[in-house]
Image (cartoon, rainbow, N blue to C red; front, side, top):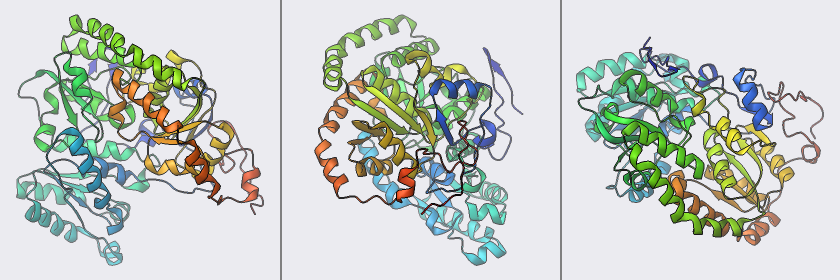
Length: 510
C-alpha cells in the first residue's frame, strides 16, 4: 500500500488495487438522517451513524451513471459500457456536451460510446468475447486515445474478468484500456462511481511528472463554464479543468500541477488525495470558493501553495470592494425570503454558505448522502463542519437519497418561498407544490465573488415566477394516499433511522 505523510495528514489511498473501496465502507457514508447539522457533525466524528434499511423506496441513482458522467466526456476517448443497452445514455449526454463545450470555448465534441448489449444468454455463458469484440470495434470506429470499460450490475453478477481482457488489449492496441468497476449493487452511495472512474484514471493514465508547472492549478469539476480561470488569472495562475472536457494528454499530466482543488469534496477528494500521496501535488485544504469567506480562504490557500502570497490580500480587498454595491442590492431584494436546499452532499453546504452570505432565511437542507469523514480525515476539507463553524447551527438538516415521497413532506413542513436544487429532475417536486424552484446546474458560475452576485440575481428572478408555479400546482394531483399525507414523520419507512427515530411500522397504508 502506498503511504506517505504531508504535514498532519496521513494518506492511505491504495492505488495498487484494481478497484477503489466503496464509500459505504471507506467513508462510512449514510443515506438517511433527520436532525441538525451540528448533531450530524458530532456523531460523524465518532462514526456513530450507519447505513439504514428502508422498507419502501421510490427511486435511486446508480454508480455507473456517475462514472459515465466523467468518462463519456473525456475528449478523444471512447467508452465501452459492458452492460445491457439500457445502462447507456449517450443521447442526453451529447446535449450536455454541446452546451458545455460552447460555454468553455472549446471545439464541438461528440460522445463516443458503444455497449456490449449484455443479454440473457450472456448472463449464463459470460460476455467476455462480446467485450473483446466491442473494445476492438471502438478502436476501429473512433481511433481513440484511450478506451474506458465500464462494468455494470449484470457484468459484476456474472463475474466477467474485465481486468484481464483490458490488460491484454491495452498491450495489443498500444493505448490505455481502462477498467472502471462501478457496478451499482456494490454501493448504496452512487457517488462511489466518481471514485471508480478516478481510480481508473489514476492507475492507467496519469504519469509521473516530467516537469512541475508552478502556475498550473488542477480544478476538478463537472462540465461548467470557465469562471475559475478569470479568478485565478488575477494571481497569474492557469486552470487545468478536469475531468470532463479534458483530453487524455491533459490527464496524463495531472501530476505536474502546482496544486489540486475541486468544486466539492463529494466529487473529487479521492483523486486529490491520491495525487498528493503519490506525486506530491498538494490538495487545497479549504472549502471550495462559494461565498465571500470561503472564497477568501480558498484563494489564500491556493496562493500559499503557488507562491502568490504577496498578491492575494490586495486581490481579496479589491474584489470585496468591486462587488460590494451589487451584493448590497441583491441582499436588499432577497431580504426576509425563506429558502430550502435539496442537493448533493458537499455542494449543498456550499449553496448554504452562499445563501447565508446573501442574508436569506435558510429553512432547511436535504442532501442526497453524507460522508462521515473525508479521504485522509482532514477537518479542513469537511464542508459541513466548516459551514457550522462559520455560520452556526442549521436546525432542520436531513439526508435522503432522492425519495420524492419524503421530500414532498419535508418541503410542505418548511414552506419556503423558493427551493434551490442541484439536479434538474428534483425541480419537479417543488414545482408540483407551487414553490418557485431553481436548478443550480452549472455550479462554476456560482463560484467566487462574481458568482455570489450572479446567484443572488438568479434567485431574485426565480422568486418573480411564483404565480407560474402556483398555477402549475393547481393542476397537479398528488400521487400519495391520504394515509401518507397524514403521517407526521417523513422518515416513517426507516427501519432503523440514523437520526434517532425508530418509527418503522408495517401498519395499514391505504
